[in-house]
Image (tube, rainbow, N blue to C red; front, side):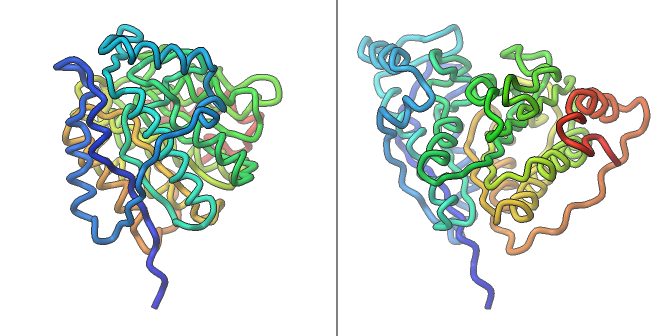
Length: 352
């Protein structure tokens, strides 16, 4: 009998204790929809208990002044750190809990204790800069986890895939000068936070290790799937990572209230399946996904279900041939724009 895959989830009711004002989209109830998808598969999942990140783990990404600023704001009670990013008395503790869970999940996968996993944490993290909270994010969970993988698991080549509808500016800026961490992002553009143009390809020794795929509003399953097939797959074949982390936002869903994309549950299933197949082919299956955005109940529930089903599948079908990209189509336009920047770093980008 084949060994059953060891897939873990991180969830904890304490993540609902980080509060924003009534009506704010990044609200505790988001996790109820995520929890429904987890509950339907709980008998096949392991649970990983979260623990708060230590200062030295946070300081691998953020400045000491940033930690002090967040702590001081929390001590003064509920307030805001920027026009969109609110904190409450428990926010520092809960943000540490999100970062610590992200670290432990990533390390457990890297060390072979788990095959893969999904962390249903909040607040999200990919907008948080080294010295600045923004975009609902206090600490950059995925960047903090990546630094822990480098430091404690000796992961030399790491791929971060960000399929949140917003560009992960904080994550990009954490690694854009490093050739050992490749950041790949699909995002609605132009849109908040305004970064992520196709020409942003890294800097200095990290040139070519940032791959931005800006997408116009209205893109759906065909465009996202085609981009993964025609851009992500050849990038991974070129870079050959040892592990994959995913900034897993579900706000590109057609029913999300903040964005203008048209992904469905089937689309998220395909993104997750492609990413799982790439992890299996190049990384020994090592794959960890961390919740970022997603502000509609249907998108959160359907997206989480799609991700968990892809992780739980005993076998992943081989990668399918790339979707057609007819001349004049949105997919062809997007892929051509990305290929014009990235082909000098990653052979095969945009190829049929």
